[in-house]
Amino acid sequence: MSVGLLTGLWLVASAQSADTLTYLKQQQRHASQFNGVSINLLAPMAFPQLKQTPATWEGALCKANGKKNKKAVKKSLCPGLRGYKAEFEITGEPRSYVDVQVFGSESKQGLTFTVQNKSGGFSKRVRIKKNGVGTFSAGGIVTLSNAHETGSGEYAFSYTVTALYQ
Image 1: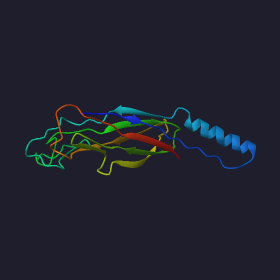
Image 2 (image 1 turned 135 degrees about the vertical axis):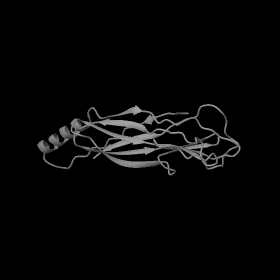
Image 3 (image 1 turned 120 degrees about the vertical axis):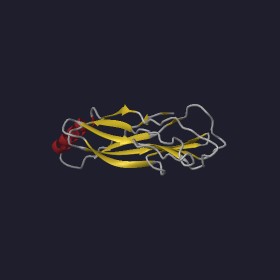
Image 4 (image 1 turned 180 degrees about the horizontal axis):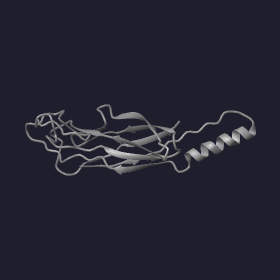
């Protein structure tokens, strides 16, 4: 199973009203923060091979969180197997904070993919360390939503990563 990645970067800067020299210094500081900001995918989200049997219930799922999935065939699409979170690195201004939002919820042929939890997303504050790099991860869940619509083959799902400097 492959999971695609759609990455967006959202940066917001604001300057307070002040005299011209102060304003220019603030703009230069903001510009230096935003130059070179990037989000890099270090490792993609990976699900093990999904398996559906006549005994598999609708609502059965497979998680990509680094832990083994439940062994019960009725409740799991990947019994006893392990899926892995996507790993990201953010480069930017050392010792700054970045608010990261990861969203994704998509249904295809009887399967529903959501990011991290069944609500389809999460927000997290990431600290850029003194070396200019911060890291975070994002897991996902694939749920059997309609057993009669599934088929064999690869499914590709996408999610969005947004970063906002503070």
